[in-house]
Length: 387
Ligand code: OSB
Ligand code: MG
Image 1 (cartoon, rainbow, N blue to C red):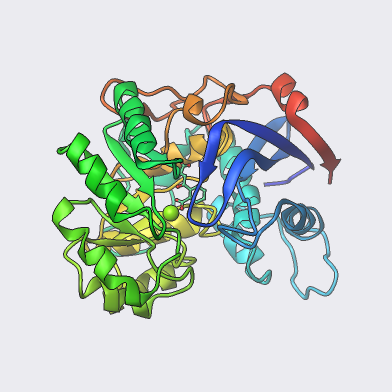
Image 2: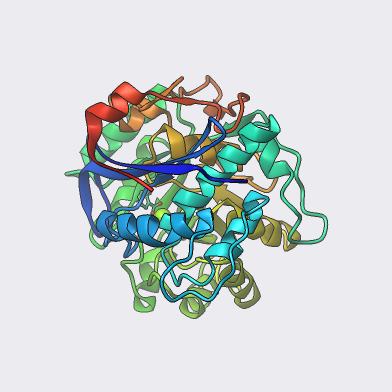
């Protein structure tokens, strides 16, 4: 695959409503879009980082790493101080090895790797979901049958009060979402869950702490056990695996790891130590779709269900998440809501809309299966560069 040119766009997108977690609050999202050109075909990828909150990767640092290292390495240019010999990559699943000498920066790597997947799928005449089905298997018997709709829910940020939360959740239920995740923090946890269970006794409900608690907070989570939550997401530190095992041993509710799982090896260790019973897969956090598919396969092999997390992606990243979630071990609804839950207007057409059964349809067109609208991109663009 010869890459002729790469265009980078930095954009700022206002959110429909502020998104608050235990660690940060956002009113706008900054994004980098990567467009790789090859023989007149364009492959798109998105850097949906943030930070340095959820991850250390800020927009400035990602721009630098993508422009000065990742794209040149992909194009086969010599990069300062590397010893590698570069041939063009043949398949998208080879990109992670190409990027392996660069330590860290998984979200930046994903932005470039995902553009290669899109480009390759378009060149092969495949949708992204079909392209994922061609990925080599990373564990015995890994399933590759993809569905045409994926179950989704909504991730609800911290609200000003518990009654405001109950209202907000009611709004999303009316919109048709059948799985609700709420962000929690100390002082806004058991009360929030109790109030939601009183108002909506039977809804599928889960919580996400974004790493703000400690093992000594185990009683808080034990107090949630009677509420029949689907899972408790990332209660402890963002790199921790062993202490989550100690917490899981004290709980009936499954722990789901998000921030702690950066690689397929991390997933293997977490399974081995019984740190969690469910894993959240985000291709950005994992450095790309290939690593994400490996985590999918490893979990499938061990009977651990996975689901697709989100980072408030625009339609570019969202399309990839939907395609990924169509793989068979994605057994729980994803944080992949409709475009309008996040943005007044998405930058792609068609936008993602919620089906009656709380699903999104998996695009069937070539590659990501949605078209980036260049006029909308231009409207939001703060910076552009060409490599
Ligand atoms: O922890 O899952 C998370 C958004 C940004 C960063 C981290 C997280 C989130 C969400 C939102 O929960 C999920 C979405 O995209 O709807
Ligand atoms: Mg999370």
